[in-house]
Length: 317
Image 1 (spheres, rainbow, N blue to C red):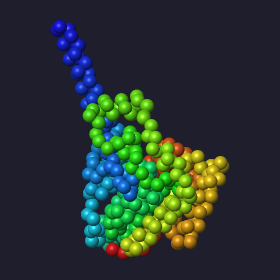
Image 2 (spheres, rainbow, N blue to C red):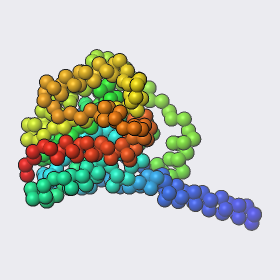
Image 3 (cartoon, rainbow, N blue to C red):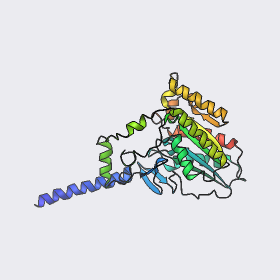
Image 4 (cartoon, one colour):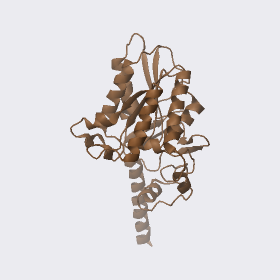
C-alpha cells in the first residue's frame, strides 16, 4: 500500500510539474478566445492578455491587438487604424512590442512633426484569416475611431477570401471559444490528436460567384467609409512567398492583381505593392517565416515602406 501511495504521489507530482511547465514556458491552458459575430464572422474576444511561447499578446476592449484606447482620438494625437489579417496581427509567434502596429508607432514617432502631434497611436484591428469583407464588417460595426489614416494591409490570398462566417468558432481548434480545463488538455489536443473536420466549412470554401470582385468592392467601401470620416486611406498588399522570383504569380493571381491595380487607379487609392519591393532584395525568402507570414526582417521592411508613405501624407490634428 505504501508503495502504491508513493507511486501515485510521484505520478501526481510529475503531472503537476508538466502542467506548470506547459503554462509558464509555452502559455498552454490560456489561449486567445474568439467570439462569433453575425456580420464580421468572428473576432478576438475583448480584454485578453496571455503569453504564448514567451510572446506577450494583449487584446483591448475593441478586440484589437493594441493597448486600451479611448473611442475618440485624444487631442494632439495622430491615430492610424490598421486593418488586416494574421500578418498585421502577428499571431502567437510575435511579441506585442514587435507587431507591425508597434513598429509603425515607433517609426511615426521619429518621422512625424512633433509640433503637430504629441502622441502616436496605431490601432491594430486584425484577426487570423480575415479578408477585406471581414475588415469592412468590423469597420461598419466599430467605425474608424476618429483616425486620420486607415491602412488596409492584405496579402494576395485575401483577394480570394470567402464571405465572413462564425462556423469555426468553438469547432476549429485555432478558434477556441473557451479556455481548456488544463494546459495538458490543450497541448494533447493540439499536437497529438487529429483535428476533427468542420463539414460546414466545405460550403463556405466553395463559395460561388466573383470572389475577387466581392473583395475589391469591400476595399472600395472601406475607402469610402474612411474618406467619409475624414481619414486618408492607404492600401498595401504583401505577396505569397511562392510569388517571388522567376516563377512569379499564377495566372489567376495575375488577373486579380490587374483588377486590383485598376481599382486603385480608378478610385485614386494610395497603394503599396510589396511584390516588386520584396523581389528587389538579394534574398527575399528571408523576409518570410513560412509561405505567407513575415519574419522580423519582413515586418521591418513593411513597416518602413508604410511609414514612409504615411509620412508623406498631409495629416491634420
